[in-house]
Image (cartoon, rainbow, N blue to C red; front, side, top):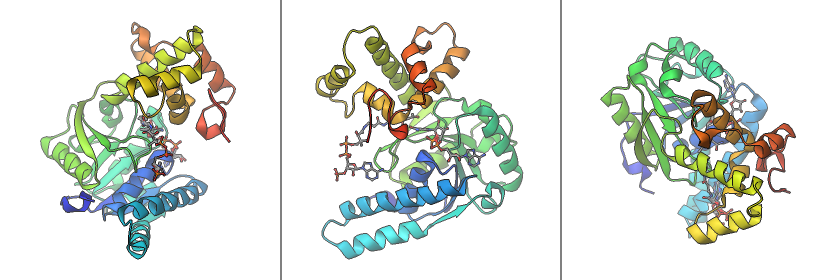
Length: 297
Ligand code: CAA
Ligand code: NAD
């Protein structure tokens, strides 16, 4: 891949949050030859992450080295070995160039983390959040290094999706922004630049689209299957909107809408959706819980 040809000022990256997104971000960083520390408060999560990273690396390395199983194995092994794990965010950031936060989508929890990290990390270290829906400026409000803070928004599944949204906050300097763009390229992503507006580019369009699809279903205008077939075959989307909601997580989708509805009460596209709220209250969160709009094995 071309990812290793881009020189980056970033050599050592710390990812905080070892869930779905954090594990993917750790993987693509390690694949690009950089040293990674993956941090989670929960050590069971870290064990699970290592397993999914290893599976994904095996698939990807076999594709890169189609006719050379030995090289494939070496690539996967070396990338895996670049990822250290830790349950202590403060000691993990002591010698890092870039911190990417991918913890729970909650402003207070993100604030308390970044406050701790601000005192522990070196002065040059850039802080970034992978938030889906919160404001980068609001997250950055608790740190002193506001000039070295921005958004790095990845997409699920991280090893496969080629986009990275690079978000400038109000105080993000040009040098920080350029370093983040170069780093994104170094891990093999195509970067687009976004302002700090709700949902940046992709989620500002995708979340209302998913919401409208659920409302269409709710009105009884078409079945879930037919809505999904329609958008796959009629608009060439890889997944239909209802299956995509299940894939992203119905809790996550609800959480994003609720946050925006509170902030922008006049925007009809962000209003609560009874069907979505009911499924979430029943613990039907989509693929991850085994059932959402559809059932999964
Ligand atoms: N690691 C490595 N390989 C993976 C992988 C992973 N995590 N996930 C999928 N793959 C591979 C599969 O093994 C498969 O490989 P082969 O072709 O060699 O068999 C290939 O990718 C395609 O996968 P599938 O055959 O299982 O299914 P698919 O063709 O439908 O592709 C998909 C799966 C890439 C997820 C595709 O359906 C897709 O692009 N869906 C839309 C995803 C999307 O919109 N994501 C954005 C969500 S929004 C978001 O992330 C932002 C937010 O803030 C909420
Ligand atoms: P997840 O629930 O899979 O993972 C979050 C992890 O963070 C959990 O393992 C949890 O134990 C850990 N955590 C919570 N508080 C912590 C703390 N203080 N210190 C260290 N670890 C902590 O969630 P996810 O889907 O990976 O989402 C993470 C972030 O990425 C959120 O901000 C979300 O909005 C964003 N995001 C999600 C998607 C998606 O499709 N799921 C896409 C793009 C961005």
